[in-house]
Amino acid sequence: MKKMIALMLSILLLFTLSACAGDSGQESGNAAENTPAETVIPSLEAQGSAAAEPEASVGGKALVLYFSCTGNTEAVAKEIAAQTGAEAMELLPEEPYTEDDLNYQDDNCRANQEMNDENARPAISGRIENLSDYDTLYIGFPIWWGTMPRIMNTFFDEYDLSGKTVMPFCTSGGSGIDQAVSAIREAEPDAEVREGLRVGSGSAENCTEAVAAWLEGNE
Image (cartoon, rainbow, N blue to C red):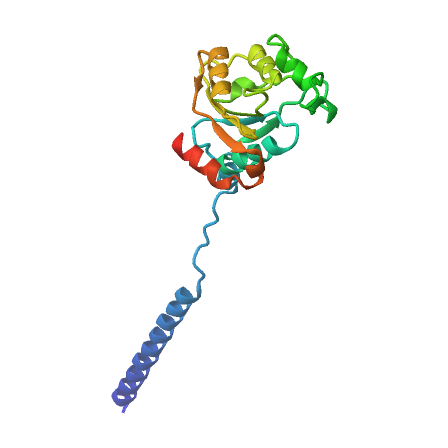
């Protein structure tokens, strides 16, 4: 009788242990399934630096520097800055040009007097202290009398662009940019002066394709 009871207790014990083992395995499986996967968050520092310093098409740190009286050249400058990620800076005259100063029908207007004098050098307001930081300069201006305004001669006289890449661009009612490019190459013989971009004054607000083609041709 005792043997029979012992045998029954042994069978009951084995059944109980087997059931516990099954429950334990199921619990472990459920825990693993419900544990959320690790979330990888991109580095905020890397995202910030990538957005703040987009690469310019020519290479290195770039600056769009422009002189604009009527807003046409400024519009092209902003388009270049948008497509390249370059900084933009306006070149301001110490004495701003008025509407009368730009009345080309008047032989005595300021613009005509300056263009008639090869030695005229209108003063620039302020000074660019960190120009040496830039490798590529997109330099823009309107065309006056077939070439760049005398204030641009002031700029090239005051700043040495040796070793830099210069990308000239202009707006004009009809004249080309070739004469201005030649003048820049003469003023900055140790800079790499690329072929320029001319945008018609009436197309300045819609120059996206022209700018893109010019930049692509200078990659």
